Image 1 (cartoon, rainbow, N blue to C red):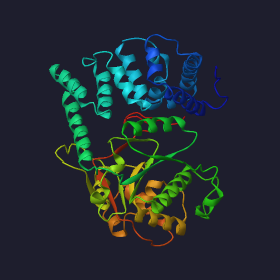
Image 2: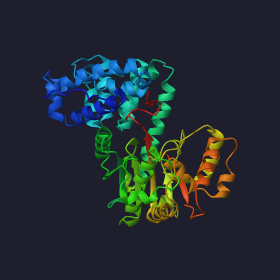
Image 3: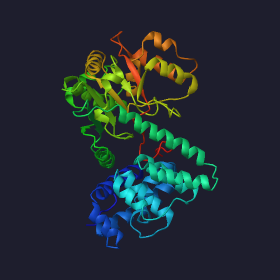
Image 4: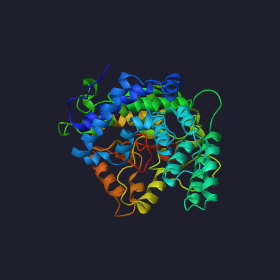
Length: 431
């Protein structure tokens, strides 16, 4: 049945379109996809979707050009007929089609797609995208082939690819060495707004590929705070509430679940995190973290690069990492709360802090950092730096000196921030 484009602003329409597209594409199983590849009719719904995408891309491109930056362009391009449904061996279309499937977390289908043609000698732009996909899928032999082909051509980016491949392999091996056989060590919780179904589909498929048990937690919207959570909003908070409140309240629900859970640790993921290692729930966090309450493992705090000789995962004290970042990245404005692990005791501490202080208009990442770094640790931060300034603001919002969480940073990172399922060099912005 043909679906009409929603009668709302194009930015909202773009998100709704991605929801519809991902919901439809997520239901394409192997047999359906094989039928498409044999030249079968994709059906009226898919044909309608293709027309919607084309019309919306034109509309947004004219009215909201900032939306069509790299991430927005890739996300929409992945749903066009050229990227998904035209039977062609054009390398650009093949990579786009594989990228669309990878975007949805349909890893095996993406691998099948790139196997259709020998792309080892593709131009740099295509080869680089293919290389990243291979690494995400742990298809290191195929990534090796791309490096070998680039080296044979004396390509200038062969050395960079070889270094990145070494980092990917080291991260995979380090995580594998830290796994505990048998029962899970941590419960995996994923925050997702019900309207962001495309992110849920992509995360669901990715974690299934990684054989990682998980549960989704419906995110709280700042526009519709449940009555039982209203007491957590600071009395002086301006109304209407900004988006930071919804995120903090969503994570509060998970902290309560971890504190009351049967497992000693809990993992918090936002739905725009891209998990980079298998077996996330079976990592030996007890050995890795010791007596720490919280450990961040996303790629913005864990800026691990080039340490390919490291044999296993490591967890460094959070104050040490922040002191280095305040110098090396003084303008870094956000570290994200998209990937971290909490001990049950640490979760209980956060619940107690939230019940006592309430939540304020501040990002969840800064909320967590402000309660994980002591005054002495903050004094170590270089000035001027955004990190020092933001922590001062967060510190002023605290009503009293509560228990400070003992924090750490796990490296290499176990997840990357990918807002639309694409690589970290791209990010969508509204018009």
